[in-house]
Length: 113
Image 1 (cartoon, rainbow, N blue to C red):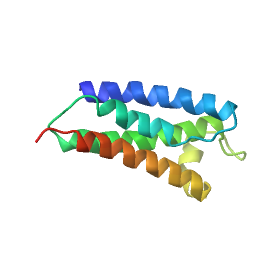
Image 2: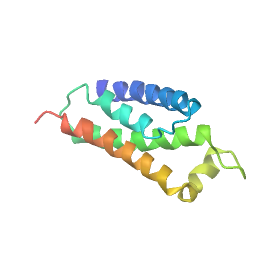
Image 3: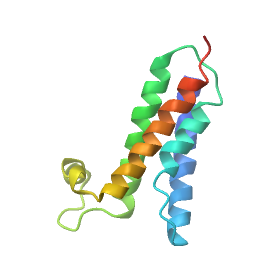
């Protein structure tokens, strides 16, 4: 539970960093998911399920960050955004996926055997 709590703090910091960098002209969509994973990796755990949960949460954090800063013009609702995620630019999907990969890999690598 401590790892998931740290992951939530990391995702929040990643979102704030993403918004601050976006104001400066940098598009760091990888930040919410990767900081989620780095924060969750602070705590060692025994379960690989924590790493899987962090990977899924990292992808969700990236999608929510993308929705907050640039929703679709046709409909700005979250349901419409999630139904049309496949219409995002490939580089945005790539950055969200990389954030999810980092969000999974760091806690997975830090688990106790």
